[in-house]
Amino acid sequence: MPAEVPSAVRPEWTRTADGTPVLALRGRLDATSTARLWRELEERFQREPVAGLEIDAGGLDYCDGSGMGLLHHLSKGRMTPGAKVNLRDLKPEFDTLFRSYAAAESQAPPAPVERGHGAEEIGRGCLALRADLRAEVTFLGALAGGFATNLVRVRPMRWREVWRVFELAGVNALPIVSLISLLVGLIIAFESAQPLAMFGAQIFIANMIGLIMVRELGPLMTAILLAGRSGSAFAAEIGTMKVNEELNALETMGLDPVRFLVVQRIMAGILLTPLLTLYSMFMGVLGGVLVMLALGFPLTAVYHQMASSVEVSDVLVGLLKGLVFGVIVSAVGCLRGLQTQQGPSAVGESTTRAVVSGILLIILADALFSAVLYVID
Amino acid sequence: MSACPETVIEVKNLRVGYDGRLILKDVSFQVRRGEVFVILGGSGCGKSTLLKHLIGLHTPMAGEVWIEGDNLVEADGDDRLRILRKFGVMYQSGALFGSMTVIENVRLPLDEFTELPAEAKDLVALAKLQQVGLAAAAHQMPAELSGGMQKRAAIARAMALDPDILFLDEPGAGLDPVTSAGLDALIRELAGSFGITLVVVTHELPSIYAIADRVIMLDARTKTIIAEGRPDQLRDHSSDAWVRQFFNRQAGAPAESSPTN
Image (cartoon, rainbow over all chains, first blue to last red; front, side, top):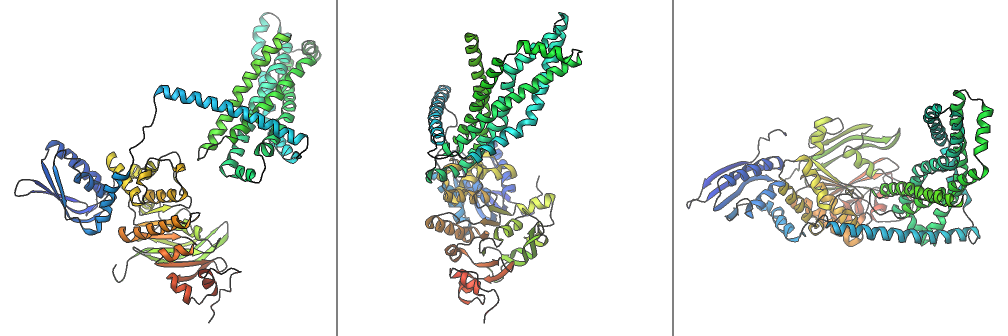
């Protein structure tokens, strides 16, 4: 609690000739003393309701905004419903301040209702979803246009930007892709070693690791890492550019932001994801092989077992998935960046949306792949 | 105002810089109660840096900043908080919290530092907004306001706890002349009707003439105060060619700073 101010307000109660209570305020009415007095008065008027009240403010030497708030509140009779309240002798230097309270209340609009009805919220959500789908389709169109312009060389592709993104999102991701893929390979091999040992089938770990890493987990792990690492970075980078009006600057210079910023990132994504996927497949298989070696199988046996089950077509399927996932991650990252709103949390929101929708779309695409490949096979 | 107004801010031999690079030296001045005191100077002379040292955001290399008898530079803990409560600051961009409505922004200091009942806080916050002419925009989000309105709202927030001193960083920057003149009128009213001492950093000449009781002028080459006084005095009678050039808005390289007689 703040220390007692020696000159804090001193309320004194008297009565007029006709019995109306008179509250005389002397001294200093600041935020601390006002808070105390406010509560005291509320309790008093609840205990002893009054029919009339006279406030003598002539003794106030100092009255800040909160003190003035109390005088206004009292003078409007809000603490003493039904009573006639009269405020008198307020020093002229407080006049402007006092009048601003009445004016403020007359001008302020009522506080808006915070939330709508549940059904209204659902409706809003559906409309937002529709708008989002529409934005995605428009974006795809703009993207196709941008690629066409760049690739048929109406305007040359900015390859330097492509390589910069390639290095940032691809080369710099190698350590984390190595670690995660190796560990995932290792974990799967270890987890399956025990149940397979019951059937004397541990050698088939090689088949399983080969297929699962090459067809499924290699592309998927790479894409998820890419969504977390680079999709978010694209959204944040383009989002910040939007907040800083750099995108407006591009547009007024006659440069299409999609062609100028997005195409390069997607091109980098197309180039780097298959390579990164291939690398991830290799590291995952390596993890499995290490476990097999530790279990006592010779390397040649593991190799032959793996080569008998994994075919070139499996690797190609994995690479194709990687390519599609790469396009999804970089396109969604860029789209969310372009959709960034105004305000301090806007860039954070777009980054989150980039990662969430990136991962969602990757899984959807993967499911689609599985279904189509099942039918084809 | 009495014949010898009380000093509320006293800066003694302030020396300011970052990473060993000196920006300002030998800065000493006094601000009196109830006046509008303007810190001005060309771009890059250290105006905003000086302000950041006056409000305790940065620690100077040497020197003292006394605010109503307390040295802000050496204060810490509760002492420092007590000194910080004596002033409010309006930042150049307004620095309103974007996730809160305008009135919530103004209420925030009241919520954090007073024991007032909720209805009292609403009433005070609304009155502060009224004093800057923004009561009608109380429930809007900062992003929905124009630049000038955001600055007004920021002034209302700075005034929420009724500080004795207000620091304003470039109030007119980026505003149209009408809005800027409106802010100037508000600044004069705050000093006149509410007795607040205002320290304003700006380089906008029309504003300086409209609001300033006294100015100090900083200079990037000498890295210190090169002029102090009333703006019209400095414009017409300064012995320094660069000061006259500044006040008369003449282009060209800064004139020699040495006194010309």
